[in-house]
Length: 234
Image (cartoon, rainbow, N blue to C red; front, side, top):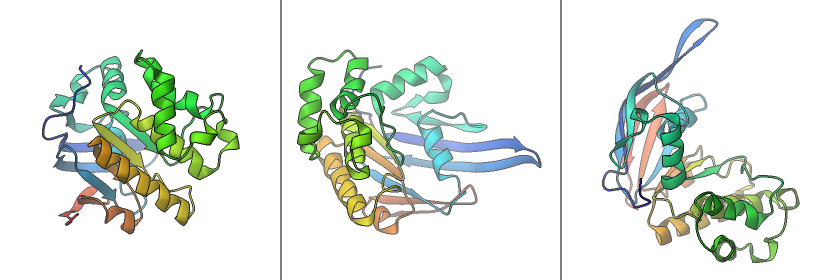
């Protein structure tokens, strides 16, 4: 798999379903989800708690497996791959931003950002990480460990880590969920700025209608089903 941008569409979701078993029997989390996302598009996945948003994002990334249907990333059926191949695809094609930041506590800010490059055995990991951390306003915090950074600073480091390999696709799961409104707005501004600069496809799960309204398109889930899909004039 080469680290080249996806051809259109970036994502195809084909009759995707997820069912799990619990003490009361079978529980359907997602049912017959079907949509596609163009390259460079920004898409918000919205819905009430328990509607299946995070499960859908996990399936799009190949972190979970569906009961039925499949997902294609750049034309690649990710569930025709084995676990090692899916892990390699994620490493080469995907960036992630999580609500809980997911920084490694024993690494400094710059070491966290360098890590994806080092896993790819890329050249000048330090220099590239320093440039991107400077871009996100963290030039004076390069050598700080996560526990000494505020929530907003940790999320800026997480953004830099997600963008450092210039992946064609970025997933964000409630990226402002642990931040106050002002800090969260700053992180979202930065995310959309980086999206425009790097021309990648952005898919984010959010409960915030103002964040969703900044995207090209909104996909709404309700009770595990695709309830609404609308394009915005952004």
